[in-house]
Figure 1 (cartoon, rainbow, N blue to C red):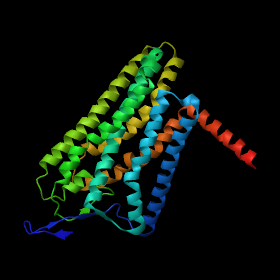
Figure 2 (cartoon, rainbow, N blue to C red):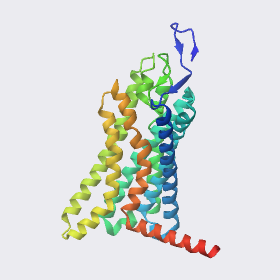
Figure 3 (cartoon, rainbow, N blue to C red):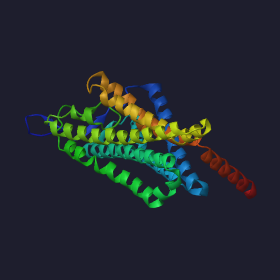
Figure 4 (cartoon, rainbow, N blue to C red):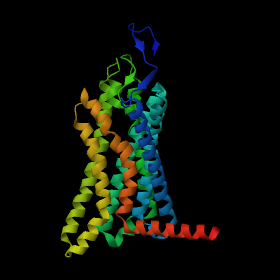
Length: 319
């Protein structure tokens, strides 16, 4: 914290990420748990990408999007988890103002990218179920690439203005952020500036991305549900439902926690509770996504078993 002659107050040049207020063995235990989750997340998502790349049977639009989601999940937790692990291990809570803004930007940009990508995956399931005969024509490789690249571009572009507004604020009410990463509301509570423009920019951006993507996804689900109901046989309905059940579960898990945090009051104990809830979309979901898509997808399971069998044969041959 560096002094500056402006209203005889201090201007913050670095922050303290308080993280989780635990000490001793509990702190070390949390470090071990998060380290295991993070390593498992990176390993599982890389494994999914490799399996999809290696098996020709998975060279389909649906798996292209699953691979794209796994690639995203390599980066999303990497923005916050390594810094949290470092803090738990060394008790060093400092982060520079530039580092804090960078963490804020990449964390929320990757979160927005995931929303756009889940929306694209919902559209993919809609085309597969409601227009199966033209599925491969509509969801051509170029279209799939454009949807994934568009998700990344829109995700990163949409957070620029809120981040710029946040970076222009003057912080003087202490430097302790009650979170494990640089979150919007805790940072605004430290500002002595007028936060109206920053709050409005963030609010409109969050509403546009979150509710816009959720609305489009729900439209896809409504069309899918209507089509499934029209199917005559129960087996056909079960097969159709199974093609988007994994995506539905991921959407419920991801949006459920985000909407829960969004509608809660942004003050007092709610902020501390939201910090704990934010672990789900930021840390837990990136691990669960590859597990969900693997366990509920027979083609992926067969590809995994085939790869494991090939690896065992290769290992025995080397011996």
